[in-house]
Amino acid sequence: MSSTLEFALTAAAIVVIPIVLYLLTCWTGSRHRENCPRCGAKKLRCIQSILATVKIDGKRAPDHWSYYECEACHSRWKEYHGELTTVSDDEWEQYCAFEQDE
Image (cartoon, rainbow, N blue to C red; front, side):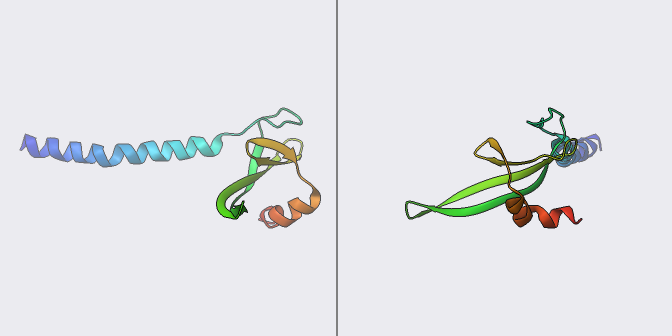
């Protein structure tokens, strides 16, 4: 009977431990914020991430960029290729306006 109990505990550990690690990773990842380039507060929140396919030299290639807003000073930023740049009001309205309504 002890071998059955050991098997059940081992099987439960194999199933439960990865689930717990996954949930902890998701929870801590969602709490991570970057520093705002304007005010320095650690309150830069991702508003929108865009995945796209673009043509480069006639070939399709994946591309992505993200839009951020500082919860402290309300400045808006676009991250593209790891670089944060300011966003025009027109571009923000085009890609992020519907996110603000929620």
